[in-house]
Image 1 (cartoon, rainbow, N blue to C red):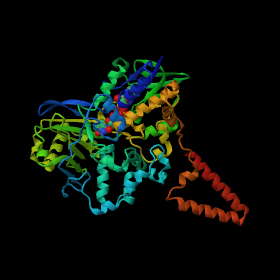
Image 2: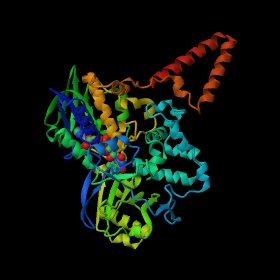
Image 3: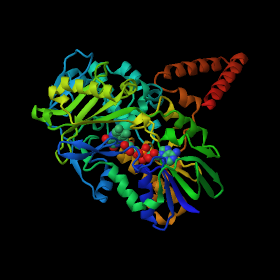
Image 4: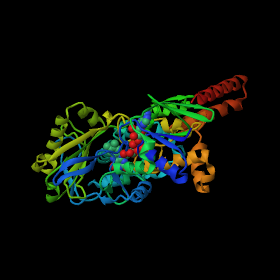
Length: 528
Ligand SMILES: Cc1cc2nc3c(=O)[nH]c(=O)nc-3n(C[C@H](O)[C@H](O)[C@H](O)COP(=O)(O)OP(=O)(O)OC[C@H]3O[C@@H](n4cnc5c(N)ncnc54)[C@H](O)[C@@H]3O)c2cc1C
């Protein structure tokens, strides 16, 4: 019998395996991976370039200095980072396609002074506890609305709405109308605020890139873990728990073990058949966490003509029928092979995803010519990856939560179920959705397994980490906590006043009516 089976050889699953073996090298571990490669949502390709060939990431690429989990791993594995090129003019084109194109050189886009007063949304990120998002003031209210409906009610400058729209499309591959507002705040809080998601400055999400590409992280972890322990092309279809034994099934094999770490994205974890069935909360949560949609592209060039013309290569565009992409950045390699990287995001990805690769390429080049000049047509190579079409990913960069999911089901995302433990960037509390979150989640799941199988190998601090997810109960809602949000408070107060008045009048009928009303409200509350 194996000690641990890990489902998924992405960064989280392999980080979990590494952590387990660091703690106890005698553990027998098998990693089962559906794809024919390791790395999951990271993939690095060799592409034709100005000086022969070079490497570019078609999946996750940026890292930042505050992303300590991935930065430590990069250092440990002997890899290096280099800064994102940001010098020169950045292009901002919001509104309709013939509206004015702005350029700016600051880290954030040019905005009117009014936007500076319209900053509540930035401050709200600071009020969210990632571990316990329901403790946020107005949590229920915020989780019952989308980011778009919050902005419609509380953000009064179109500029800010449009900028947050671009951020949402590229960070989540989703429209603001698709995300729970509380989830959006929690995601930003896990990154240290909203600004770190948007910027390329030190500490931000787009600060640096990994020399040679991020898939090397998984390749080097796989070497450490032992390639013979990683079975590619082995999609897990079922997990059965019976007493002290777990059976993990693929189409052709059954692996018997003491514990399992499932590290695939929640919407794919939901496709595995569990016996006994996972708790209803988890089932409903994972069924309601859609994956974003990004098509990422790299275009290599003989020269970095944009730099020569004083542009940084960064362009942010409002979706329109003519321009496929939302953002582009300079992607010149450390060996000075010029390139641009960009994303067709969300609705645009659904729309342009149905067209041919040549159509997308031509649409992108036409827009680059408009923003950076005619030299954009003289490219060497165009490469793209539509992550919605990638088997065992089904989209990217991250599964999001729709309204209601945080309030009702969130802790079940990482709460172990018997001998099944959950990893994956979506379960992270620091830089959730990012490479760093993937590493953190894998390391945390490994500690949970050890807390279960071999607690004596853990320090006191590690034991506390291992216990935390187990103890985080799904909140039990009562009618009071369900209805006592900001907007319904007057209604509840009015009801209580009416009830008190009736009680004071002491009539038999009013007592009966009040009792029936409370029974009704309690029953309604318990249903949730
Ligand atoms: C285009 C794109 C751009 C991104 N940009 C950035 C960025 O710049 N910076 C950043 O930090 N992050 C970025 N990300 C996100 C980052 O790549 C992910 O957060 C991270 O790679 C997730 O790792 P993971 O191990 O949690 O999940 P995954 O990488 O998805 O790993 C899960 C693994 O499970 C496997 N699997 C699924 N189902 C099964 C099954 N049934 N049986 C067996 N195996 C299964 C999958 O094949 C996969 O290998 C980006 C992602 C994409 C795609």
